[in-house]
Image (cartoon, rainbow, N blue to C red; front, side, top):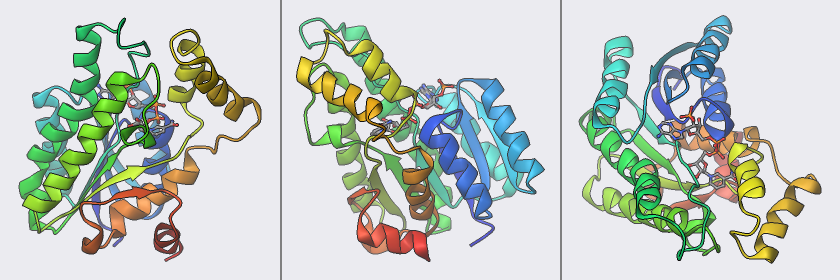
Length: 255
Ligand SMILES: NC(=O)c1ccc[n+]([C@@H]2O[C@H](COP(=O)([O-])OP(=O)(O)OC[C@H]3O[C@@H](n4cnc5c(N)ncnc54)[C@H](OP(=O)(O)O)[C@@H]3O)[C@@H](O)[C@H]2O)c1
């Protein structure tokens, strides 16, 4: 499996960067994407210095031209595509439904839903040819509502249904939505910073408490599960919403 070619979006920091590092360590060849060029290029250098292979495509996943360029980079550089990890995501707007603007909602859905749809469409012909995988990073928020997170909850629920339909329509590939748990990344820092007065007080306090009590795992922990799913998830799991810490995922990581 060492030669598999994998796209990881949102790889400039957090879960995406951790998963990309782990995938490179497992021998995968990578196309990494985010909007911030500096951190992406630093990660490419780091992977190459460790004898791995990676190329960066900077840009916004909600832009169809960027999605086409990401897939083209995989074909130009490596000649094939085995897996797509739709990881890029934003939580904003953190605001009650009565306050959040339509523009902020539209931006959230563009990044969290339309981006993965466009990138999957661009990748599909090449993934079919390799019996490949699409792993879309979702959230518990897809099924468990949180005050102040209306757009994010709706977007992740939509991502789950997108994935379920993808699995129905595309029997040649394996399509999974992934639930990483609560992770120590910039997204959690934004929730602590911006959630006060916008989320219900007890819910905001719970997220602050996870951090203050040292209960947030580093991104490498769910990142290992995400990397294992991208390379090895079996076809029988297609269409499912899978938690990072399920026993069957731990077994996959162990292999
Ligand atoms: N952290 C958690 O507790 C948690 C829990 C459940 C689910 N998740 C999910 O995990 C995924 C990763 O989040 P994270 O926690 O690692 O957050 P993060 O640290 O904020 O990282 C988000 C990544 O997405 C990129 N990104 C944002 N908008 C983009 C766009 N329009 N186009 C391309 N890249 C974009 C960011 O890079 P640039 O800013 O450089 O573009 C960054 O690399 C997300 O889908 C999130 O919803 C996180």
